[in-house]
Image 1 (tube, helix red, strand yellow):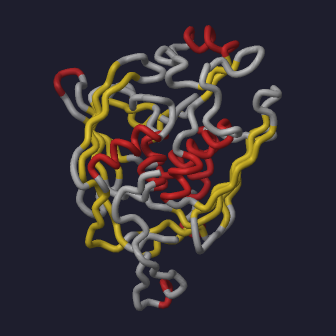
Image 2 (image 1 turned 45 degrees about the vertical axis):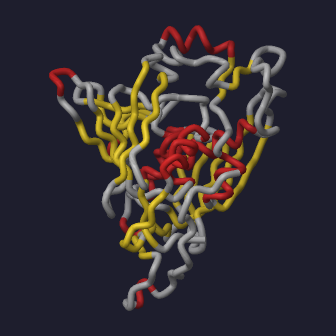
Image 3 (image 1 turned 60 degrees about the horizontal axis):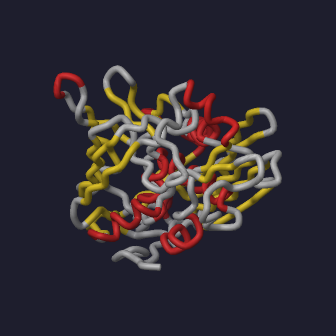
Length: 314
């Protein structure tokens, strides 16, 4: 069900933690923002006391290796934004200013759940402006070897259908599909954690990645199985986390999507590439209002009641 109006946070809320790749501690404040603001990151703590405002849009993406990065190293960047972006998108929050004093969003427990907890502390406010959607009009598809990602028309919802296939019995082949809605995201996706293979750790460290990774924020896969003493949160936690990442990455479209996303063995690079393919031609998409205008071009869009008025606790 589509929201009819834009939303923001009722008050500011602060989170502190380390970056999973940098290992550095960072302080992040989620601020309410005015209508049509969207999601933007205010990167503080830069050399010379400078700040930089970076819109959370696909045009700002500069890296997709192991995480999604917006901005650039020289003038200021923010890495690993996908779990926070997934939480905001999953709960239907449109307008937020993310003030952050370091180069990477804190990993916290490796999922979107801590961000949801923070949002629930202050609540979500409905704003006076109509919500707009990015409606997929034509199929777009990108491939990388056996992997692919595509966006297809879907007038009713944002549907995600994600499949992974790892050559290890710990993961194997898993598939998960949902129609994105706040209750569904909270229950089925939000708690799925990032994961990695122990055999890759030394190589990642050497490349400057995973310096803050631990069993507190990552599902670690060893030779004989899961190394985390508490086990998995979902039996198919791996594909659910890939779906979570896709929600966060695709939110960089800048508006909530009306369409179906399908991927096989995808990741941050393919998620970003399918957005590039979508925006490569204006004929691939249309921007529509949740509440229809009088013009015929908007006649097919329904106007359901607001889906999110206050935090849901599950």
